[in-house]
Image (cartoon, rainbow, N blue to C red; front, side):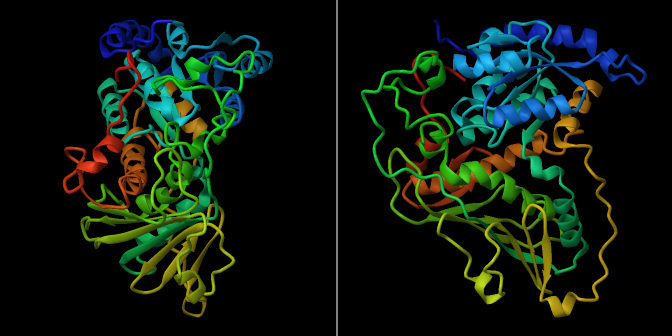
Amino acid sequence: MNQSFNRRSFLKGAAVGVGYWVANSYARGQEGTSPSDKLNVGVCGTAHQADYNLKELAKTNMVNIAAVVDVDDHFLAAAGHAYPKAKQYNDFRKMLEQKDIDAVLVAIPDHMHAWVTLAALRAGKHVYCEKPLAHSVEEVRLVTKTAAEQKRVTQMGTQIHAGNNYRRVVELVQSGAIGPVTEVHVFINKSWFQDKEARKDVPVPKGLHWSLWLGPVEPRPYSPDYLPEVWRRWYSFGEGTIGDMACHYIDLPKWALKLGNPTTIRAEGAAPHLDWAPKSLRAHYTFPARDDMPEVKLTWYDGDERPGLLSTLGLDKWKNGVLFCGEKGYLISDYDKHKLLPEEKFKDFTLPPETIAPSIGHHKEFVTACMKNDPMMPLCNFSYSGPLSEAVLLGSVSHRAGNVELAWDAETITARNAPSAEEFIKLKYRKGWVL
């Protein structure tokens, strides 16, 4: 199969996609339309996280699963059984030739995120993509820019953003409950790491289209140590624990403190390995002052790394969370709970009013926005989640470049002081694959 994947060919296809959408979007966006008028969605990936997404889409009762894509015939067959009306494909590019698709959901390994997302956007489709948005900072920037240019509805898969707990924490921080926040600690008790070479001389399983799975990655022999799921351990396909979890947890301080692009990033830990992610990582970010909010020092911890302040505050039982440090006190939060500290000081505290409305559901936000053709309706649209993904990936870039501090220039997408980081900011691809 010709692996050529260039901007010109998909821009040409975009004219057809946009034309189809213009002809149908008004009907989907009007109140009082028929209940049978549903959003046609093509889903890339069918197992694990993709299976979860398929089920969440079905719960909205507003979606027709029009197509499913998987490079593993066994997974694809199972999805075809669950969604018998969906057309089945191994190659996402073939799926995008299906003219009745309105939106695409991307739930596949990170190294393929940008390729599917960009192709779908350029073909006039709305896109929901799992986190992080792409595999490199340059890819994320291009995805964000393309979504804005195409005026498509987008959503990144940070599902916890729709939870009530995050909303209450944002209200507390922005109400000034703990005063100006200058320090944040984000920690996760999880570790995607590798410590030995991948097994070789293992036959490709029947039904697995290995070359399609590799996509833009340089050809290499198949190994069961690469997939499924464990691909996160390998830099060719993912970014370890920070790539898996930081978009979920750093999302909270970004939202509450209105964080933009960091100015410096410095990882610390073990010496980086060329091919695989570390067992533990600590990454320090500096975010500049915004409006009346001061500069923020944010530190990410995963694996065995933990903020020392947890013991000081008697918070050792918290395995995962975000700790905000303010002039008047502390606020710690996980996905579903939060606490103000010191407890004695806040025992009679009056909670601020609930100003952030409950979510209708993370997936339903996206589907409803597509029906209304409203790109800004989903709270995790790419204009928000793009900068979040870039910041997350920069922690990995700093580590892979030798745990060097990056003086980050967001406008030019360069680390001014660290040319060694360039190869991790802008990746090289297999011959014939062009962004």
